[in-house]
Amino acid sequence: MKILIRNIKELIQTEKIARIKVAGRDMASLPTIENAWVFIEDGLIKGFGNMNAFAHSEFASQASKSDVTLIDATGKMVFPSFCDSHTHIVYAGSREIEYIDKIKGLSYEEIAKRGGGILNSAKRLQQASEEELIEQAMERLEEIKYLGTGAVEIKSGYGLTTESELKMLRVIRKLKDLSPLTIKATFLGAHAVPAEYKQRQGEYVDLIINEMIPMVAGEDLADYIDVFCDRGFFTPQETERMLMAGIKHGLQPKIHANELDFSGGIQVGVKYNALSVDHLEFTGDDEIKALLGSDTMPTLLPGAAFFLGMEYPPARKMIDAGLPVAMASDYNPGSSPSGNMQFIMSLGAIKFKMLPEEIINAVTINGAYAMGVEDTLGSVAVGKKANLFITKPISTYAFMPYAYGSNKVEKVIINGKIQ
Image (cartoon, rainbow, N blue to C red; front, top):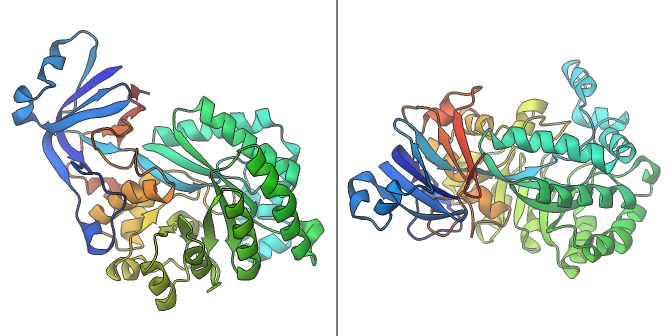
């Protein structure tokens, strides 16, 4: 399929030489082209530029060919699709009853102690069939696709038994075949300690290391390994053991870190070259110093802090210190029941005081880095996948985080095909 989009009011995140990430003060810079065009063929971006020079480009002749779909984007903008690098989209049913408990004043940890939280989702998932999980997850993937997301990382972690963790990961593998979105799979057996292992947490860690990880790797079910390293979950020492086992089996680390306290999770992630460390509500000078000398992407999940009424991570301090920042949805049934990355952008402005340019970098190029797809997604560059969306008529790109609550996306192109 060939597509020529013309008269684009502004083409966002354009790159002649593709970058892998953007950090510090550079996050406030956003390359764009006004009055632009972009040509797509065989699922890839083949060329782009200013309309004033289009007639002299090698693609000018394509405008009159019968096999080229022409799109007039007058008054509209074109963005690279969002890269949502942290979700838990595969789950069985919602948890609005716990939401009522939150309204009544119970904390995240109090709900978990009563058998709610992750353990509630684990019980439901263990009872659900693969077919049921696939059907529910496909609905969520279709929803986020039309909100602008073109790539998504999906974690296991609601199984908490070998059988159910493998079931989750097999579902994710099936979703890779069924959905046009780019999907990465992460093994998160260490999402919580199952009730039957209460007071025997070390035995569950051994189960993950000796049984789960080898079986996950043996079936090639995951790209990454993740651990919830935080107060009340897994210690830095336990996290190190599981990450080392994962690395031995070819799984690069990603970490849930410092959501509930200064857990040491960020430092462990940096030590083991984690692709990203995520949440980071509790991030101080020591954590920032550790991240500055690393290739690990700090990934913020403002939807969870918003939903749980928690403290927000110090995004402004992190960027001003020279760090890159990515933002992701954390789409899950308990702490962030939404995959709307447009709303995540708004939270970046409202709660993090990030500039529109910083926000767009955080959900495109840096999000792509945080899920290991920066070579193919995250920006408009020749040779990258044609994962783009066309907005409704908007005044400036700052309108994206400004107008929260409405869908500004008019048309979606994934892998060079109009959805």
